[in-house]
Image 1 (cartoon, helix red, strand yellow):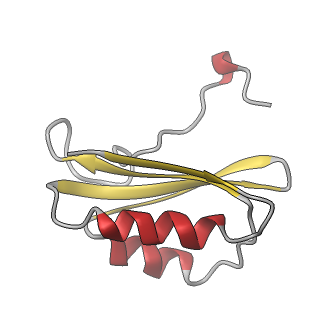
Image 2 (image 1 turned 120 degrees about the vertical axis):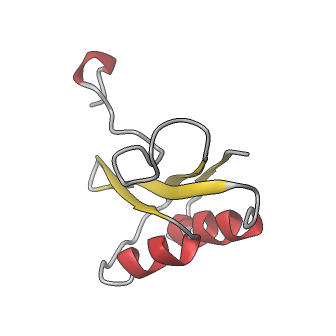
Length: 98
């Protein structure tokens, strides 16, 4: 099943907490994972298909210091497993994301 974790703190460890929570959801039928962070007042998305370790590999090349994140795994029931279909989805302009 899908898993969603939101984390906000005064500490700058939201990325680590989000990834650790996703790891606790391993083997629940997901096909992709992603994490949205707030960096310099902007929402940044990092997504990958497959296991959580793929997302960790993607993030390993980035220096991310954030206190707010939403991590999400997608259940393999709709659409093909790829980065486009991975959650969370990009904010659309009609949602007033600023």
